[in-house]
Each structure stands twice: as C-alpha cells, then as structure tokens.
Length: 205
Image 1 (cartoon, rainbow, N blue to C red):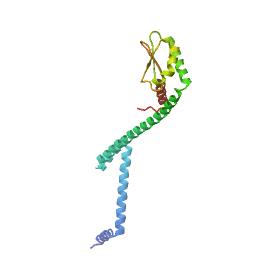
Image 2 (tube, rainbow, N blue to C red; image 1 turned 180 degrees about the vertical axis):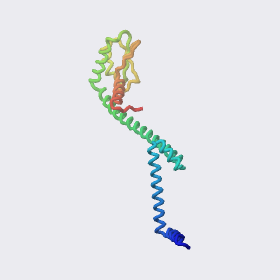
Image 3 (tube, helix red, strand yellow; image 1 turned 90 degrees about the vertical axis):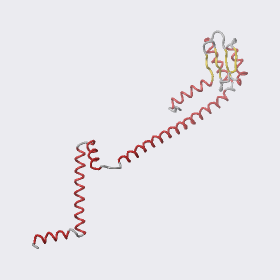
Image 4 (cartoon, rainbow, N blue to C red; image 1 turned 30 degrees about the horizontal axis):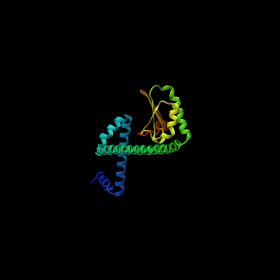
C-alpha cells in the first residue's frame, strides 16, 4: 500500500469515530440550514405570493386540507358562540327593560288614584275639544269610570262614554267619525319605552 492509499484509509477510519461523525453530521445540518434559509430569503424577496407558492412546492404539506378544515370548523364555532352571546345579551336587555317599565307601570297604578290623574285627563280633553265636532265617544277603563265620567261630561257634555278593555294603564281615547285621539297612559308609556330604547341603544329585537 502506497503512502497516499494509507492516508485515505486512515481518513476513512477516522470518520467512523463518534466524535468525528458527530462533527461531520453537525456541519451537514448547519449547511442544510444555511441553504434552507437562503431559499427562504430569496423567496421572500420575490414577494409573499411567490414565497407561499415556493414553500408549498418545497414542503408539500399533506396536513394543509386538515388545517383548513380545522380553521373553518373553528370559524363556525366562533360564529355560533357569537350568535349565542348575542341572544343572551338580547334576553338580558329585554329583562332589564321589562323590569324597568314594570316598575313604571306600578307607579302609574298608584298615580291613577290621585287627583293629579283626573286633572291630567281633564287637561287632555280641554286641549282636544276645539278639534272635535259632531258625534264623539270617549273610551276609558272600567276602573276609571266613576272617577273620569264627571270629568268627561264637563269637558264634552255631548260625548258618549264607553268602556274600552284595551286600555290597561289609564287615560282616555276620543273617537270621532274620522279620527281617533289617543290620550291613554298606555300610548304615552309605549312612546317613552321606544324613546328609551333608542336613547340608550338598548333596542330589543
């Protein structure tokens, strides 16, 4: 064996030692990383679209369809959660508003037993009287008949009086041949509720 062959054989044997092999493996990995980084950097310089395309061609990731499905499933789940939360919010808002106006109705029930209530109706009738000609029917609650009948007769002597079961909170309706004037507390409360919802942005669907 000549000198050159002997050196080659010794070099081959030295590559088989764990230390040398480890160093060789590390150098190969480092070179691979450097090359991979160079590819990535080159791709990025070509723009995001080309980069994505290049990476897909190199990677060929078989999990992409599953990842997309998982992403879509998560999006659907989040949309469902958002819808559920919106429903809960609407229920909460509805309970809040209903509770508030239930208290208002209780206060109105007490109010309809006071002289101020009878005066309110008298003022409404006096305000509408100039607009009324011909036959007129004043509608009111049965609970208010005894209190308000004298008030009606004083303001509109020729008017008929009728009980109206649709009036819950109080007040009167003035019905002529062509026009219905609503001076009920029901109408006022509904208008106040609508204004409150708009003003406080608590619109309940």
